[in-house]
Image (cartoon, rainbow, N blue to C red):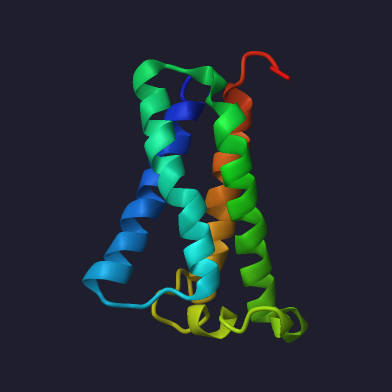
Length: 134
């Protein structure tokens, strides 16, 4: 599994990148502020993970972990703000993303998929490291 974890992380980031562009640009669904923050983390991840796969660079975790961690925190906040309105005090955009534009299995929304995607990328990238460089 460790052998393919970098490739799987890139595939997940690439799938998120393509889905985000498809829904935002082709279908014309405007992303909310929290979605934009997640895009700021996801789009560079798709690029740098692709380069890391091509170069077989397992030290990419130094650059990918902060991006994936930031994306995970924002996605988790957004997913929680949909279910618990008390979290919507700072950002008033979780409602739009909870609309059934895209619902997987009847209850999984875009923010839920984003949490899952960033968590998978984070764990896969972390598992690719050969040694900790600090």
